[in-house]
Image 1 (cartoon, one colour):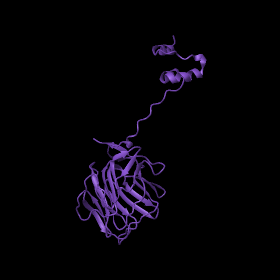
Image 2 (cartoon, helix red, strand yellow):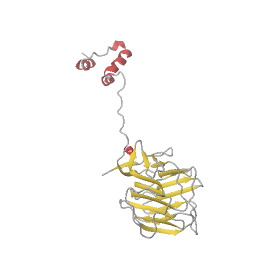
Image 3 (cartoon, helix red, strand yellow):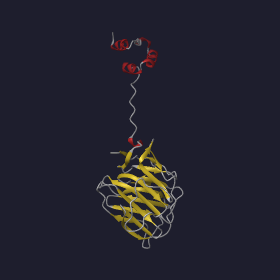
Image 4 (cartoon, one colour):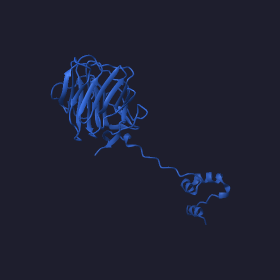
Amino acid sequence: MSQMDAKYTTLGLRAPDPHLGIASCRFASLVMALTFAASGCFPMPQAQPSPPNETSRHCEALLFTRPTDTVQIAGNTRLQAAATYEAVVRIHDATAPDGLVFNEWQGAAEDKQLTLGAHSLWGYAFRVSPPDGPGGVVGTLSIADEAWHHVAYVYDGAEERTYLDGQLIFARQAGGNVANGDASLMSVGAMARDGGIRQGFSGYVRALRISSVARYVGQQVSVPKLPLASGPGTEINFDFTEISPPGTLRDLSGNAHHGTLGAGFGSATAPLCAPRP
């Protein structure tokens, strides 16, 4: 008795007659696919890979490690005489260059940025200009301690400010309205712009809120509790602990600025869902 005959006898079945050719093999496949795969009638089905963990609904945060990690955001914000960009973050690689946490951009029409590294925080709103030069405000800091931090850029129509954990880092006079595009790109992390790819922030992002109001005034302010609340003036509100399949980040502001992981440009990659401890 052949090895194949023995397999079928054990199962109480008759082995396919090799002299009947492919027709017998096809019939047999309907009876016992795995056994016939071993006999050479057709290849063994390959195991399907597990879904990537960036589609998990239970994350501590999203982890951005590659320069092309990004979340594409739908739509456009409308900011004018005031703005707040804020995020709750943790540095992953203190040696990595500064990178984008948030960017909304359209050529020479619009540029809203929150850029962060272990030693600097930069906020920028195109067309908002201080008396002595172009817009943007940089704060020098040190957050290479693997702790969670709240970072913010605020513009109130008269001044630009950056904050770290509620403490004012830098401020200067500024004026004008924030420019808004009508067909801009918007993302958390890396962005395809200026003929290339602008690198994203290297680290964990727990929350992000973009507002059309100045939320923080003064030298020392209270750091908001998580999850960040929505309300009047909230344009975007992301809680990075809730990722819906297949890799969608829901905007909690009610403005439908939902995010898609790993989208926006050809080489875009998806940040990882950092599991909860």
